[in-house]
Image (tube, rainbow, N blue to C red; front, side):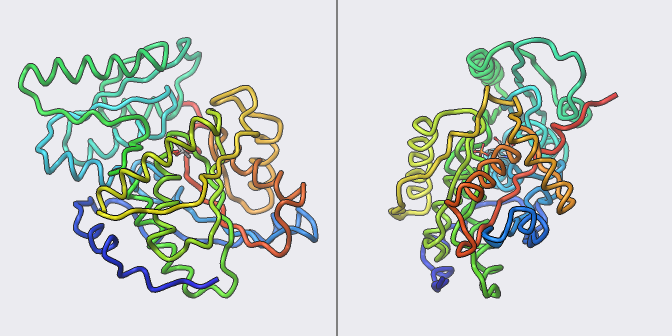
Length: 336
Ligand SMILES: Cc1ncc(COP(=O)(O)O)c(C=O)c1O
């Protein structure tokens, strides 16, 4: 596969001018997974993993890349309070709380959980450790309304507030993955066997939007990108990804063409945060063969999708796949 010289294109120059915090450790490593491949049989594709679980502060993960852009803008706007939302084990909220602590910003988190948890999830423990103020609500609808109300009350009292949507999945946040694709293009320039597929978990859509847009802008448009959903239907996620890509185009002042957005929604099982037998088996297999730990909510389901594509022959030894590890392993743990 050719990697064009698009790294120096006009949109990528525009990207460089957009304020970004230097928080993460880049480039995140790319590792090969030979023992996992061997366990999958002779026809398995060559497998690589991009370790965005190692992005750095606040226990890493994909949110670091997005928050570098979103919080740089908040600082430019002289914001005093950051409010955001998520589930009670939210990785995004934990990373936001960590960044806010580091930047000296007050952080308010509105977290939903249908019932009070019988144990303290590690992410919730860290939210509080990082000094965030936590509001617990019972539904997704309520958390959005609560964020809007809290933001309005603060604004009315003269406080400058940034209300960050779910997963920081705005076009600005998704720029983190446009630059990640630029980083990937540089890493792949020394690869003899370049991936023709990327598999990753896709939920609030910013990661996939940034990867798809970044592939176009960084000369990696030959790579097919499969976002595996841990919760929503493909018919919900794909249009949202496309909408964020249009927003990225507006920021970078360019039209971003793309293939139909590929979202796999066959691996959700009973729903968000509920492991399936296949995702649990995938988590165990990758840990046992490669010493790489996935998370139960997102990456294990994405890996279950990849393993299914291999076992059913949709991917073969003629393919090379890059699995993007987006972090989140703290969901495996509770605090004491
Ligand atoms: C560990 C992990 N992986 C993947 C995702 C999905 O990323 P996105 O919300 O940008 O689609 C998330 C967050 O939702 C996450 O926390």
